[in-house]
Length: 279
Image (cartoon, rainbow, N blue to C red):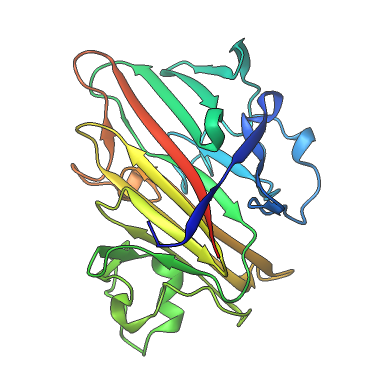
């Protein structure tokens, strides 16, 4: 905790009928979740292309790949109890309970599936941040750059045929990633391995995201789109995404790159989000 920082109580809102999407994360006079420019989010049906409406989308059992952003963001979730929603698929059942008592947001998840079921989950949080914002994570954290970063490297800098290029945080392969900065026409994704806690710092505001889960790979994914995507109508979108797994695409995940359901038939995890403001 930074000396002189005071807690800022957070409140959360979500839309169970539309993928369990988090629609607001508000604290003090600030809304942390960005709202995207693309219309049609409420008309989405299973199998539809992803609509980048902002907020926080639940991505499971993959982020990239098939289906894009996973199976659950495009389906209605069932209200099971106050603050608790459930979504069921043929191969898994996911239950989520969100509380914001005391101003700290706590989301508890329970995934039930056959033992050995492999998955990637991400809290795909798109944040409204200024060009001065930065992401604070432990220096030296192994970080995987994904292929869109190849265009930012010198010729021949990307290993042919590889799904990622690894290097230490905050500048894997010489690309400085801990600052968001002004729009420069670039877009890239990265995954910080074995990194369950990060802090977003934007002026006097700090947002802390921490992921707890026993015996599963915990990461933080970064999506830094500074007006570089999509190619036809680019805009700015910034994702800081607590993740179970170590790869965006489940199809790329090696033996230790995905979460795996143990013999008990379920995995539980907790995401905690808190905010502070310095004087």
